[in-house]
Amino acid sequence: MDKTAIQTHVERLWDQSILPELTEYIRIPNKSPAFDPEWRAHGYMEQVVARFTEWATRQPIKGLALEVMRLKDRTPLLFIDIPGAAGECVLLYGHMDKQPEMTGWKPGLGPWTPVLKDGSLYGRGAADDGYAMFACLTAIGALQAQSIPHARCVIMIEACEESGSYDLPFYIDHLGERIGKPSLVIALDSGCANYEQLWCTTSLRGLAGGTLKVEVLTEGVHSGDAGGVVPDSFRIVRQLLSRLEDEATGEVLPADFHVEIPEARRQQAVAAGAALGESLYTKFPLTPGTRPLSTDPTELILNRTWRPALSIIGADGLPPPAGAGNVMRPMTAVKLSLRLPPTCDGQSATRKLQSLMEQNPPNGAHVSFESNWAASGWDAPALAPWLERSLEEASQAYFGKPAAYMGEGGTIPFTNMLGERFPEAQFLVTGVLGPHANAHGPNEFLHVPTGKRVTCCVARVIADHFRSR
Image (cartoon, rainbow, N blue to C red):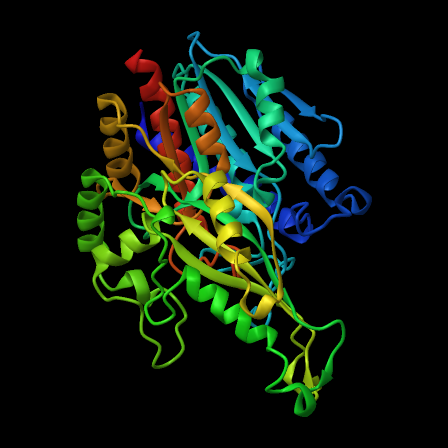
């Protein structure tokens, strides 16, 4: 395998074709269905499907067959099948839907305004995860250009990952016989702790989410009249949240949301913490004087990968301060996002969360919890010797440093689905979302050099997979 030839092929295609295509992709506000219920009428997802399809079918890849799958009442899915020199299958995954706009973009930047600056392509979705299809096809094309054999490759690009991948199980069932039993799964929807080496995701957290709503009045009333008589809905929200979280430390209290952390994952956290140091928290845009929950790198890694954590990601019933009169509001609603340890069952945790919030409501207030997300996490199987060698050699070849291993705090439902369906498969879960890339938030960007190197590494792993058979 000619390392330089692979790199030259990949970099040329990125510069001449992939970057221009991702630039146009950023302009399309194809938000995931959870954030755009009228996605069909708006047609943005279809625009992306058309662009991705056109680009893919132009690639000089032998035997490439692409089909746009459309199950009734489901988001579309791109299914690409590429024959190989072996009967085994490599399944590659990415998604095309995006998170919503978010506020706080720097001047000159915006979610639908592509800007290439200092090697980074700014805008929503290119790194999370629009680049995936382009990287997969480019890696396979680079191998074929050198006549390097590979197994059959199946690429699936879904359109509702940011909504919890609720359509994906139906497609996996529908395509089960055509997919077969992959012996290697590659997902490019994860992150990297720096841009200096290949980072392999060893685990992903699950998620229990929903809206907690507290109602105390049928309409707003004068706060001077009701204060001290009617319980304030915000105070009751605070009480209920204290059942779940220690507000002084951020620790999630109920044992139901915790698991035993495997010793191997603790040791990986020690190694990753030693490599990353204070960058684990300095990468975040903390306001002056704000301190992280800990300065111990190992504890921070375990906090964000194997321990539950609560975030309040939305609120209703609270007028902006400039428009807030002296009125006791009838209700307060907050949207909860509870990240779960990788081996904690998402469905069970969501039922526990609902019960915890709704039982014995303070002052008899009307309390409801409406779940909108229940996803289990994923803990990677042990690496086969061939894959461990391949990852190390790929990282050394294209990054010049050893491969690194760490769990991620996010959720990719696809990995858990495939892990359960194909328990004997090997997994490479990686990505390009590194320091300051800010997925889902303002100023999100794709670090282009890392995108190129990850593409080269994927090519190396696919080639080594064939040789290992």
